[in-house]
Length: 271
Image (cartoon, rainbow, N blue to C red; front, side, top):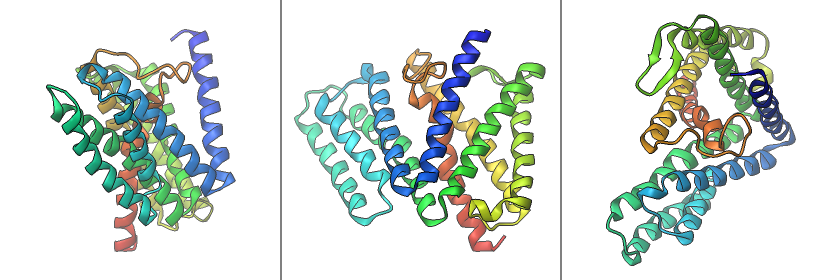
């Protein structure tokens, strides 16, 4: 990557991170609104990149967008009930759409809900039940994993991690990202548990860092697999140097559900 592209990527990444951090410190409502905007943009991108597989038109896209909005606010009872109704309506509407691949069309809608809406809804739920700063900790660990993987992979990367899907990723980069996350997790556990609203042991923090590293990597690889199967490089061009919003949040979509489950387990065992 040349210096100009790296500069553009860095600046846009900092703006993206600043927007997230600003909304986290602003409060739950602004953060929920940001999650909603991300969900809508991601569903729009997903519909566009899978258009060759069939499209139900503006009505179906609008319904899918409404569905992910309801999931983002799914911590509340009525939005969740409305989402269930939307899914039933979505399948019913397929009866009136002339398509030779109705299962594919319905599956696309359901995938956009589960792949995009559910993780972002769990993220808002975590912010509400635990603390907004808990979500900030997870974001920081994702960013540190990306930074460590990039730096170590660029300097020492020799052994391909998953060449069939992502030829540039290396085992050295993976362990670099893991090291960054584990070190940061130890420091968070010792000095910042109260600030992040996660009163867990240092061992619990280290486990959280490992979970973030693993699922961040898998999330990135899964999106790479989807793009490779669709023969595209990026999901969009919204964020200079990064591609689309899906390219930016691919790790997050895997990390958030995994972290919610992990923190629930920790609560049960009292670690």
